[in-house]
Length: 430
Ligand code: HAM
Image: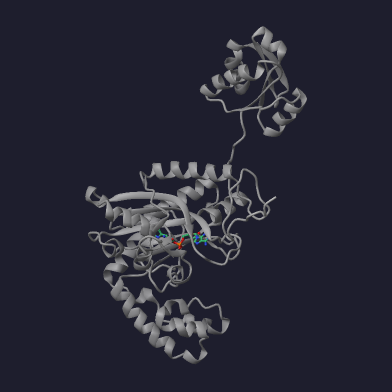
């Protein structure tokens, strides 16, 4: 026997059954995908599917070289033919915009798009954090807002409500202003933090000049006071940025969407400006952020398109579903309606014909394969979770009839082939 080969660390198989350290099942996941498809349709967003591999330069230019995602976490390799550097996508926004610019989709006017699929980041794996994970994301391109900023949030809230987890999520919002406002704030922050340079740890000292905002993320309790008194970006916003933020909040208030303002919320990707937000939970331990997003008005131009404003979000499907599984109300159902069994010469073929008839009428039918005893087949029928059993043995075959059993109610009847569909429908409606 050859040696077993295991999956790559931090990458999960999604199976019909729960695993010891990964409890999500394929049926549960599929039920979520169906919910997403309904939700995006309600808001008139259209789906986009892009390749999983892109040129590395796309992510460097959009997400930013200094970010952890691009600097440390991408799976990057040279394409052997032309030495082009390729990366597995670490997120969906950059790929979505690359496709929109490449195909000139904004020529047709603003676009509301959504996507779902695997993303790759070489992070340290733990519960809720994986190296291959999945996102559902939406991007509204070509809209100034702030009405669309609120619509994006409302769509998330709608999804949380449908999944039964709204009460377990907190919405945090902030405004990052524009480039100039951020530059002025950054200069003030660097000057302020330089005054404390002796107290900063090595990591923070390095970040002081690469990403001073991240210094404020320090978990060091001794530095909390320094962080609290640091210059706040919100105080550096100009009139236009303030008006956008105020407009956004007014829409949220009007829609009755509860939020917390977090002036420290900055997000881990470089492309954001103005509105940013995160939905967090206290139910998942360290991996608290279920969904994040914001405006990125400069990115389309940065990627070679005509300047256009844009906003979007993405949620981590594994994280979200862990929350839904424990606290929400998503129903997963991959059980067949009918378990069909047979015994004796010629029965298998006839049963296949009946099963075909039932499937064509919309019933989900599991047909027993092979020739076990009817008792053993009945056991399988029980284990399958099907409500009905259909039995075709020699007696039935000889008389052109089938036996039906309602395993939930314990009733049984032998009916002609013509009565099969009507009997099942009657029993189902009882
Ligand atoms: P992000 O905050 O990097 O944003 O990722 C969005 C969500 O993906 C996170 O809130 C988290 O739930 C999930 N996630 C990220 N990394 C992992 C991981 N290693 N394992 C499991 N889940 C993870 C973006 O990706 C932006 N593209 C969002 C966006 C869209 N902004 C505008 N449009």
